[in-house]
Amino acid sequence: MKSLQYLNKYFFKYKWRFLFGILFTIISNYFGVQMPLYVKSTVDDLMGSTTISGYEDALFLSYKIGGIYILLSIGKGFFLFLMRQTIIVMSRFIEFDLKNEIYAHYQKLDLGFFKRNSTGDLMNRISEDVSQVRMYLGPGIMYTINLVVLSSMIIVQMVNISPQLTLFVLMPLPLMSFLIYRVSSKMNTMSRKVQEEQSNLSTISQETFSGIRVIKAYNRETEMGSKFEHAANEYKNKSMKLVLVNALFMPTIMFLIGISTLIAIYMGGLMTYDKQISLGGIVAFIFFVNNLTWPFASLGWVTSIIQRAAASQKRISEFLETEPTIVNTNHSDFDFKGGIEFKNVNFTYDNTGIQALKNLSFKIKQGDTLAIIGKTGSGKSTILDLIVRQFDAASGSVLIDNKSIQSINTDAFREQCGVVPQDVFLFSDTIANNLKFGVKDGEVSSEDLVKVTELTHVYHNIDEFPDKFETLLGERGVNLSGGQKQRISISRALLRNPSLLLLDDCLSAVDTETEEIILSNLRHLKQNLTTIIVSHRVSTIRNANYIIVIDQGEVIEEGTHETLLKSKGYYAELYQKQLTEE
Ligand SMILES: Nc1ncnc2c1ncn2[C@@H]1O[C@H](COP(=O)(O)OP(=O)(O)OP(=O)(O)O)[C@@H](O)[C@H]1O
Ligand SMILES: [Mg+2]
Image (cartoon, rainbow, N blue to C red; front, side, top):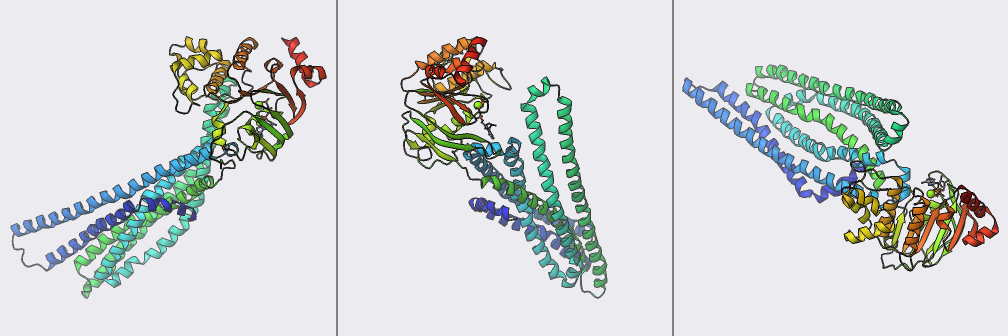
């Protein structure tokens, strides 16, 4: 239950709704308790009455009884409505706040966190788990308050009528509490398992739909289907077990309430013999015992809600308590000049233990173009990730304008970077909105859009679409070719007017001729634009001011195109090979 304490700050935030909720519960139950009492006095009056002499009297009395009873019901109902309006509404407000809190926290976390946790899991915690917690905040709390208020009011009234009969009637209660305690702890473990399966199921379906192309091309629908079915089966089986336990709950409670009613009638009946209790008293007792049914039945339900919520909140808190490893501590202005230096940088991926960079050093000054070439998996993308501080180096230092990257205002620095990642990601939105994505207020003139897409040689493609820049991309829109996507991705980076341009193998799907055009456009783009370009093709990088060749995270050769050719190493060999291929 400790995990739920986290939510107390929200109760405090919405304290007025909460307090009024309690007040309305009390008032509603006050009316509720008056009803059996009214029946009691009516029955007692009727039994002892000598005044009802005719049909008229009886009719008048019926109207009076009915009228008052209806008024009490209306009072009870009205405040019941207000009780829900305060407490359930409060729970919806908290749900809203909690979702926003989690979402904001997710965005603060570093890339490593997202590599460690699956998307399905992340989504589950913000949707399914929050719903579970909401059940505790709303119905859970409401029925608990109701139980406490109603049962104490009823017990006071019952003791008032007959302490002895109260004792008899309430006798099954300890047994009931014990049963509830046992069953609810079982339900706790069960519901945790159900939630795990639920998470698993979301992950599978999410992967299926994002990888649907591969699945269809490989004709693996049946296999994916059975994988899903297997997971769904696990989920079903575990839910079934939970349902069984849940289903046994209610009848057990009903049975115990039934016993209480029986005791009320039997013992009460015996007690009328020596006038310890009136007939009306017994009727009131039967009402009271039945009124206790729901609160006590809800006790089991509420326990399970609370336990589910506790499990969910624990999972939510686990993420909320995860501290981002990359934190921007400096908020002063930062004007990036263009110098970048790596000094003996080592980097190992936590999750795999792969050492991606070993003692890596290089330097680039303002306005220069640095090219990185090397075999696949040699650590090129990792270098770029370190430059925009997606990760921090394990040892050694990454210097931006001669200052350690940890000491500068990372946000301000990133604001001046144009990153084109290796795996292009475009949003399911219009081309224009995708292009404007990196621009702070999103205000870009249509001339600028044309200009930038001409630079990257994609304008003529966009122009052919009927909706031009308003063409919708992604799931509900057009599917672009790999090369078109890459060029839009470059345009998006350029539109930011960056001081540092990072291009990660982003012309790989473009033919060499087009590539030549784009690269030459980039060279004349802006004075003092520092560029780092990663590629597998020598033709892409030959004009760079400096080239480093890396292998297994280490620099094995470096220099300009000419000097590297002269040294006749890996680079020269690669050049020859690619030249003959062409
Ligand atoms: N998120 C990650 N978690 C764990 N290991 C990773 C991760 N990303 C990369 N690696 C590993 O780090 C090494 C370097 O990867 P990196 O992506 O930097 O290579 P690369 O030079 O960009 O390759 P490519 O030319 O294929 O893009 C590889 O061995 C890779 O398996
Ligand atoms: Mg890469």
